[in-house]
Every structure is written in C-alpha cells, then in structure tokens.
Image 1 (cartoon, rainbow, N blue to C red):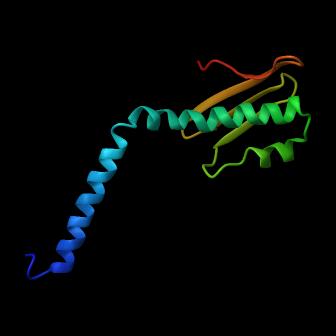
Image 2 (image 1 turned 30 degrees about the horizontal axis):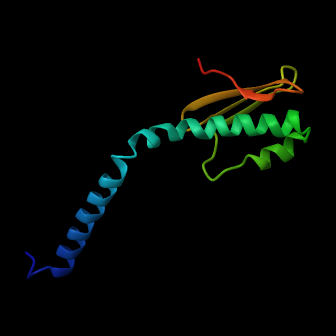
Image 3 (image 1 turned 90 degrees about the vertical axis):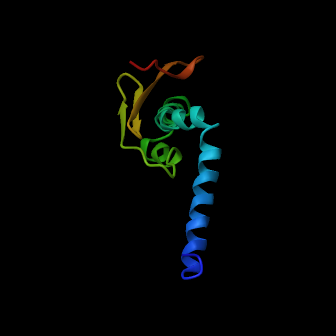
Length: 110
C-alpha cells in the first residue's frame, strides 16, 4: 500500500497525527470547552446591559459594541424592566440593571 500510494499514505498518517494532537489538546481542556457556550450569551447580556443602562448609549450602538465572531441567536432588550436576555449556542442568559451604584448584573439561570 505504501509503495503504491505514498502520497495517500502520507496524508493518512498526517490525518492520524492531527486527530491525536486534537485529542491530546481537547481532553485536558474539556471543562473549559464545555463552559464556552455559556460565555457567549452571558457576555453579550452583561455588556449590552452595561452599555445601554450604565453608560446610556443608544440601542444601535450597543448592538455593534457586543457583536462577536460567534453570532448570537437572539437579543431581547426589555426597556421598561431594564433587563437584557441574550441567547447563543443554545444557552440563554439575562442581565438586569440594579441601580446607579450596582450597575448591571447577570441573573441566575433557571
């Protein structure tokens, strides 16, 4: 096999080495990789809330301010309650403005 298809054999070996490297990296970091989906929604909700209600910026500006490479699926801004809910990567998080001295805080997830 190796003599007949040296390029194919080299590619197969390279693929095996790449998979082994990915596994060796991912396994020790599995806890952090599992937490990543929560970070997207929580960051967006907290930063949008701070931008909008602590700094007093307009909604359009704050939407651009929290935009990331990983898109969020929804961003709900409840102006009357000063509460922001953001969903991304299947997780939903909310942040609310507590007052002038406290600013915005992430709310516990249900």
